[in-house]
Image 1 (spheres, helix red, strand yellow):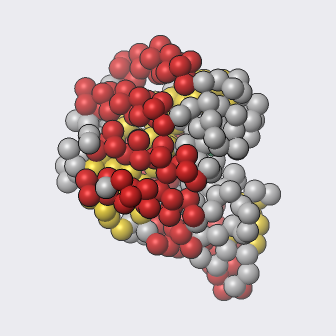
Image 2 (cartoon, rainbow, N blue to C red):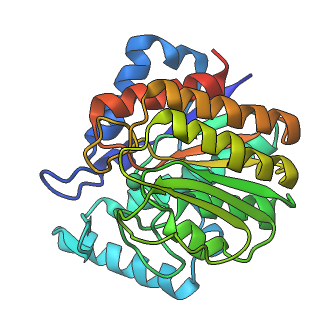
Length: 311
Ligand SMILES: [Zn+2]
């Protein structure tokens, strides 16, 4: 199996200010850990290209895309950071990071569909799963996974893709974009009564949302994966899997109150790889979402990538 690791130095330059949990050091922690453990040698390390706005517009409204571009270019010209949402701040380098983050997801999708690689992990920021069709929020500007999934369907001609989201927060943006698109099945798990306080009532039938109470541990989450996610995924027979890989459901992460550990991420990833092997020629593109305890993030991402790469 060949697995690519997409990232770009521009993703590191996006900075939401001192003390913000979604910080550039998150990417350093992941790449440092990959190097320290020798896992980088097993991966095809690639630089992410900038996304084409025509791809972005498969998931976002063209007016939103134009307004965000205008806003972020104005921030770049001013040289001063500016908030776009109470949690989300743009800095002069944000536009380039946003383009590379979505570009990684699309390039990885093309490489996997072309058979150039089997799977990919995109270590990118800003994350994407809170970005709705027409709104930036929750540290997110463009919805990287939704853009890549639509690219696989609309540009590359796949007929069915699945999006799996195990971030501690509900992927409201992805849900907003793909609700009612029967070519996409979304399955997710997230902490109930946590930001963005949505997901209890799914917007459409093409998604399974499983809110779980605070302090739920890995054993119970594995049961949900086996009893609720897998039967739906098996029935849907996705031709490709996209993963919104947030690692903030880790027990050491302060942004949520769930109890996953590295072994749980490894186990969940193995289940997803099995689904992909059965139905999708092993095709998986996974994109980093949350994960704010740097040590837990680095170890959990490595556990995830190790299973993707089969090493
Ligand atoms: Zn999150």
